[in-house]
Amino acid sequence: MAKYYCILFDADNTLLDFDAAESKALAETLVQYHIEPSNETVHKYREINEALWRQLEKGQIRREKLVNERFTRFLKEIGVSGNGAEMNRYYLNQLSSHPDLMAGNVLDVLHELAEVATMAIVTNGFDRVQSRRVKESGIAAYMEDVFVSERLDSEKPNRKIFDTALRTLGVENREHVLVVGDSLTSDIQGGINAGLDTCWLNRDHAENPGQVNPTYEIDQLEQLYQIVMEPDELARVGQKNRRHQV
Image (cartoon, rainbow, N blue to C red; front, side, top):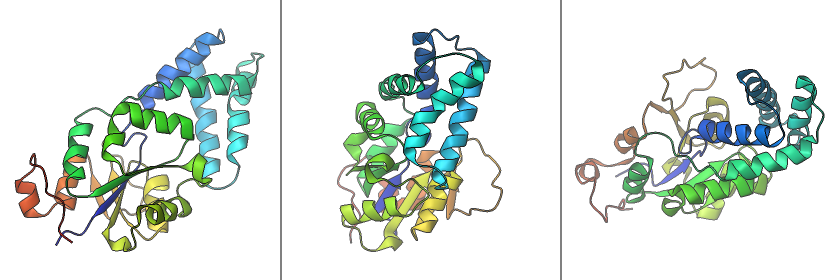
């Protein structure tokens, strides 16, 4: 009997290419506000943004502080006057318009996994941005639901967002749930906090410092077949009506 009947996927840099989307949206925003999108300015923004997100995930700041301060701090750092809150709104609108998928056959893999398991997205981020990107990328067609931290007022690795997702999906037995994501500190730690098995998608073969230990580690999505599917299901990849028998 198959172990996993429910897969909770991270979105950014797991299924959706956030790095590509961010690069496009940030360049568009800087040009809109007459700032050269040089390597230096892009690096400075990312440095500020990533530091604020780390604080948010640790519960050290509120989401509103991140939204209000990241571009304000950025403008101050580069010595340019402007309205940081207005820039942030423009940036989020641009970001929502870039539903880039990760390289490879993401939709094909989701199509196969959807034949044998219930799937959903559990993602940090802003609701209107993430929901639009998930929908327009095509991955929403394979998901039962999309759970975004802003809407649920809870960021990974807090277990609350996972608890809400499972309750909404009607999943009671956590032994049959697998969390899949690229971030050890957000996705994998969050899954562990919620008492769930986890799978670290480590495409770049990064070294694990050892503080967070996933149940599984893979470097491409297709390897989930071996974890989620029974032997007879593996033999029938590409065929329909293969959902696990409970």
